[in-house]
Length: 260
Image 1 (tube, rainbow, N blue to C red):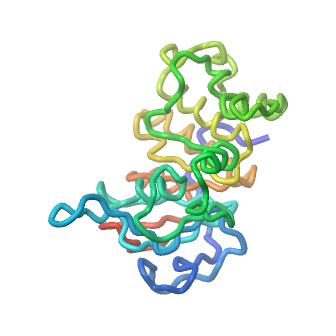
Image 2 (cartoon, helix red, strand yellow):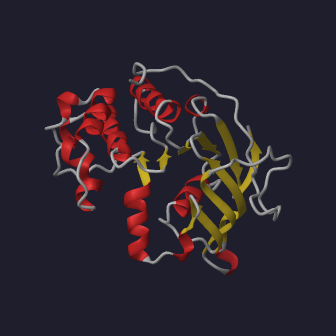
Image 3 (cartoon, rainbow, N blue to C red):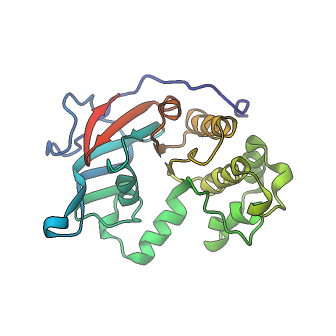
């Protein structure tokens, strides 16, 4: 059984991580700390630009970074630093201008649209700032939606465990407009984990929450890593949120600038 809701931040000493998996040096952090035996996701020389000519904007300037399996990594940086773009490229939600992105050992640049959809459905769980729940579905239906779309059977024991851990047993028949922001985000967390994905990507998951609701969601993500062995990559601008992570990577102007 996972711990009580509202766990306090706990920084865990990070094991070795190499920021430049193939030794290119582009976008890497000097003094990398070794290599994870397994990477839940990694970027190799990722470049993403928008526009052209005088209006060209570089969102990612050649980033290479690994995100270790079974770890909680926070990606921080000011607005426009490229942190959300990096996450979107890792998830196949955006196409890099050049470079490669991997989920596990799968190079997502080699996947067609159907294979990308299956990858996101089966191997990645998403938690967004705006919750992204389907307004016409109940909480129960939103949670099981990834499995229903894949025509996979819901594991009742796992479903009950997530629902109980997140404290949403009394909300399962409610639709999103009948729930608070914190309750909606907890439903979104259950949906992200229901298929037991290899990777959880959280983009500003507490951005629309009050401090108490944020603490509950962050505590759950922390325990999902520590006690369930999940791999979480979270984009955030909030140092208090980042304190829950094992490792914090900093971006600025589309480049990696620090790794703690």
